[in-house]
Length: 169
Image (cartoon, rainbow, N blue to C red; front, side, top):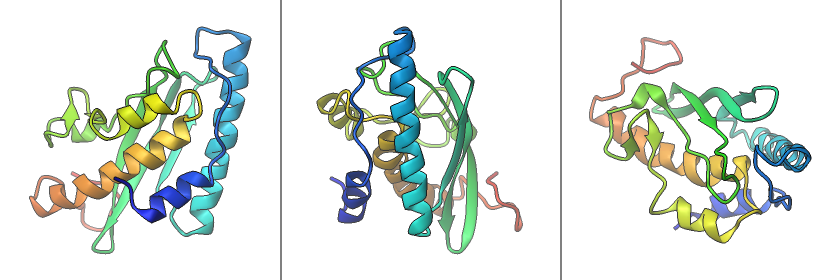
């Protein structure tokens, strides 16, 4: 399902242990610390491997995240807004990664720009609760989704590069 490079990248991420969501008070704070440590490790690993492809930040309580992700195709960078909220049932319920600019441009997406993760990622998430977190979702869900969908959307003319700028149409 996942290539060796992806598997190797995920194996370098710390696994999380606190099973808590946003409604769990002090336990959520501990979970959030683990999430941030895993994200920091993932970003460091990506930079070391010249594979920097996203930037995200959260609100103060770690329940809403926003930023951008990008994909390089034919030496052009296509950048997209990225956002997600931590669901109340987290970590038993995975996050829904949203690329609102691509809403309605591919059948592998739900209303609001939420990428489809049902077939490939959701079962993997379920078997790894509470060990997987945000960094794992980015690595195992968003990264492969971008790699599969963006070249197709570009070749189909659905996504176009803006004359040297770093974003899509």
